[in-house]
Image 1 (tube, rainbow, N blue to C red):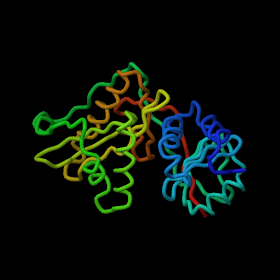
Image 2 (cartoon, rainbow, N blue to C red; image 1 turned 90 degrees about the vertical axis):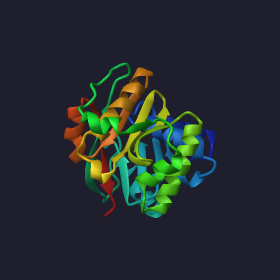
Image 3 (cartoon, one colour; image 1 turned 45 degrees about the horizontal axis):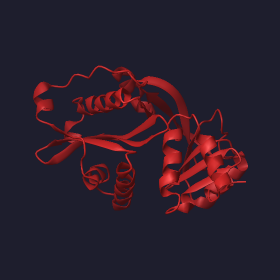
Image 4 (cartoon, helix red, strand yellow; image 1 turned 60 degrees about the vertical axis):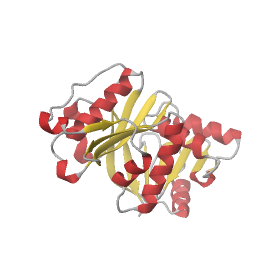
Length: 252
């Protein structure tokens, strides 16, 4: 039975279901630890399941009964769920939306920096501690709700040393950003790599991502991230290693 994580036994089940899983072992237990009391309706566990609700998307680690999972997610208003199909059967009636590749860089390894035009790169300034609101506005300029959520979560995690964000700036404007938004259990979950549209295709995003991954790996962390199908070639070319796959299923 899927139930809210509100007892020590359910917290243990939640943690055990995530243990050793790429991305999920960094993201889910950390979120539950930080936000479990203030946002109790976000975290659920079954006998061998951990479930986090993030807006209309759910993240699932471990195993659940497909019919129960479908019913529960529908009740919660979720439109999609990300899971490891080899461990957790998809919710009954849901359809495969896309395959997400897990890429990473082993601790202690280092990738060569991608080529970028010197004049362009030298015109940019790296800010290793950009204001959280500046980052949130760059990521979600037209979505106030997601911007405010991103701001709150980044502040909470960064104040505990569990997140880091870098930004490239030019003339006071943030033109590129990438972050490790969950640093826990030996993994650093990287996400939200974004470059302002006028500068896309010039390689600055790829270089910033590689620089951060190299820095994290040098500190003994294992940088990991999820990649949509259309970006697999890009990250393979940068030199990241494929670690596995997850699937995002959509509601009928």
